[in-house]
Image (cartoon, rainbow, N blue to C red; front, side, top):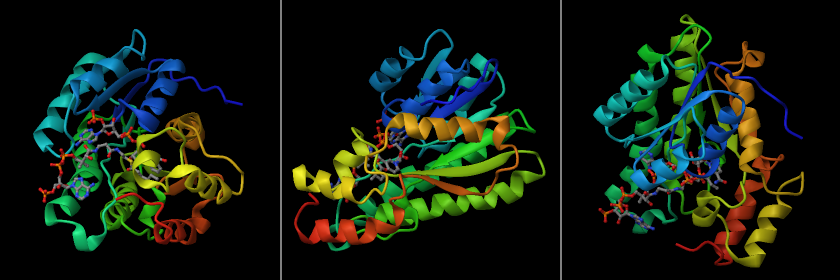
Length: 267
Ligand code: HXC
Ligand code: NAP
């Protein structure tokens, strides 16, 4: 059952918000009355997402690896909808590769998108937030604290995202800006699961079996938490990394390692 939120008149910007989990967050805020801006690299994704966000939806092309591109996208969002109340930073790029067959650029590209991109988004948005009361939400992953084979780049990048959230909560607290991170568990039907999870029927079963609540999550599960963190109900919550994973985190390393050894992780 979904809790109802009201974001009438608020401006929510979602980087990486044109597909998957982040689009689910953007759509939920739009359904709750917010003016929503989304940004990502591909024009086709931006157009498709924009058309699902209703009259107050706005889409802009941006690559989070490029500081100038992020700055320009934020300027366009603010020109359209005014200062930002809730900023979500969720752009990510990932693939499976063991360290010995990973080039320097392969490691770097994931760190550049997931971590450096998050820095650009946060750094360039600060002056455009409607503070105090503004909320910045990073989308991290269990890999930030749970080591997983073939994902050294993801683990390193997302660990950095968690620390960025904690440091910004301190630095921006005096301005009244709250900063948190959401760590989704396995979310069904997403690009992340397609790329990083154990594959096949056996792989699916392994994933479901490791979730104490007995099911994979949905983008709607994550959107509910994102709306809570963006709302006044969370006005004393800052500097936290919150898992939304049906209780799965502590069981991830053994499960993923077993799947890797059984050849269920396709590199
Ligand atoms: C080894 C690989 C590789 C692979 C790319 N590379 N794929 N190396 N195995 N499977 C290497 C390339 O050879 C190259 O190194 C370097 O990485 C950069 O690759 P490009 O293709 O030039 O990069 P680019 O076009 O910028 O694309 C970025 C990308 C791509 C990350 C590689 O996959 C992408 O755009 N992904 C976005 C969508 C996405 O990944 N969504 C999932 C998010 S899920 P060399 O040395 O050859 O130059 C997520 C999950 C969290 O975050 C947890 C879920 C359970
Ligand atoms: P997704 O659909 O691939 O979402 C990633 C988004 O980021 C896409 O909209 C993509 O659009 C955008 N993007 C990628 N590179 C970008 C760049 N350089 N600049 C700007 N935008 C960029 O994947 P998802 O599975 O829903 O994951 C969404 C978030 O949840 C990610 O942060 C991921 O790490 C996290 N997460 C996912 C899971 C899961 O189960 N799926 C679990 C834990 C955490 P373009 O291609 O148009 O750029």
